[in-house]
Length: 166
Image 1 (tube, rainbow, N blue to C red):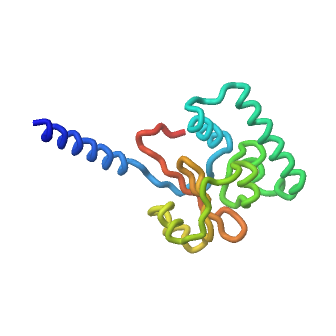
Image 2: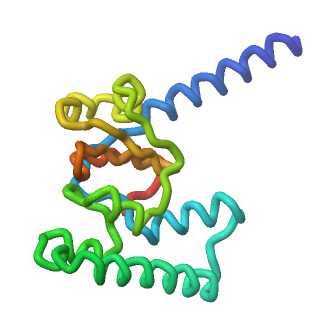
Image 3: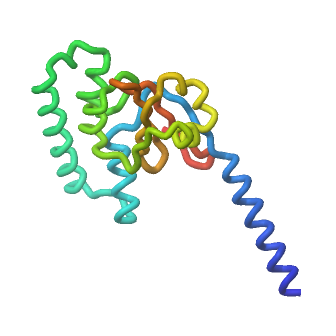
């Protein structure tokens, strides 16, 4: 009797996991994560809570300094369509350089130039970016940024249908 109940519970759990896995969607998007959203995700993963006011203000000051320093060294960015996203929204967009991505998001959790790994990370969106993507940077929990030799050519975001969207 216990064996039958245990098997049934395991089967129900496997079905739930299988259904949940199918609820995830991988989207190709022109705008990537903001520095703020990644900070909050990382902070919550490490500390199990959202940052308090002082912690968030300290982090904002650090990002502002990095952004201003980069803009002083690269004044030409002000003449691009990416300027507002970089300066005010602290958000990665298609066309951002690897240096701009690092200023905003810091180091990725994973970097790869392996086409098979890049395809696995992009899932069905790989068809759209495979001709230009030469490298991928993964930012947990759900962002992959693809580069050609000089800039971002694709941004993939895994979205769970059980998680509220922004």
